[in-house]
Every structure is written in C-alpha cells, then in structure tokens.
Length: 112
Length: 114
Image (cartoon, rainbow over all chains, first blue to last red; front, side, top):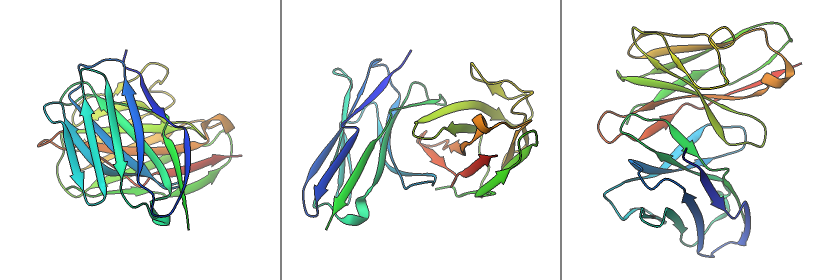
C-alpha cells in the first residue's frame, strides 16, 4: 500500500526566500506524481505533473524534481511571495488511470 | 485543460437530511473521482465513477451512504445521505486527463452538518 509523507508539516518564511518542500513515497512503482496547491476551504489547483520517466518539471518560479529510486520528490519555490501562502500537497499515482495517494500537506506561510 | 464546475460551493445541513453535489466538466472524460477531505486532513478517495456502470467504492465507503450517478461523460453527482456531524468535510470531484493522466479538481463543496 502506497504511503506518502510530506515534510515539513508547516513552514513560515519571509518574503523573497527560496524554499524546498519535501515529499516521500514508499512504493517506487509510481506512474506519475503531482503537486497541488490548496487555499483554505477551497479545491485543489494543479501546479506540476511529473511522469515517472521524467526527472523534473518547471513552471515559472516552481520546480519539481522526482527521484523514483529513492522515493522522493521536492518542490522548489524561488523568490517566495505572500501570495504563495497555501497548503501544498503532493500525490502519487500508481497506474495510468489509478487513484491518487496524497500526503498530509505542507502549510506554507510567506510573511511580508 | 478541462474545467470542472462543482456546486454547491458550501452548504449547512441538518442531520438526517441528504445533500447532492454536482460536477459538470466542459469536455468528455473517461473517469471521474470523488474525494473527501475531513477537517485538518488530507484527501481520501470515496469512489471512482465510470459512465454506464456502477461506481467503485473504496474501503470504508458504501453506496447507501454515498450514492453516485454518472449519466454521461461530462457529469456526475455525489449524494451524502442521512448526514451526521461526522460528514462535515470538503467534498471534491476530479477527473483524469486521457492524454497525460494528470488530475484536475473541482473547487470543492464545503459541507457542515449541524
């Protein structure tokens, strides 16, 4: 059974800092891994999708890496802004039409 | 990518009643999923809904409590039946894209049962 863990559970940083969110998964046989952002009481916004054959994906200030052999993914946020404050969730998918297994999330606060 | 319209966005319901949540997708999709997010928790899959067949429920979720309809390739509903305060959660529908197998989520329904 796949288990996904995110560290840290919460992170508070000043504006402008570069930061790294960590995600680990127990079963390396994943199809893809996806990072989401969730604002309080809202749905999920997809940030980055990494296929199992890829090592990283980039979108603007965000970069996500994937190391299947070690069961790890990281989300790098450059030059953080207060608008980045949200909960960040990673989710692993085991097959092409399989369900997602979510981590518990990292609550990020970026203060001015 | 596909856009999902989910409604209602929030509701406050009396215990013992039922609420039906709707998700409309702007394109045809093979599979739709329903997730629950309890307060302070991450997301848990309730069931997978395929058009023209019964939904497939995850362990701990039953059809009598969470009946699901999938009448066509762009629409699905989830009903939360005979509600209790323990059902207070955010409910989200999602789809998987046939091309890259990435997920898109609806905006969620925040349910409070009193």
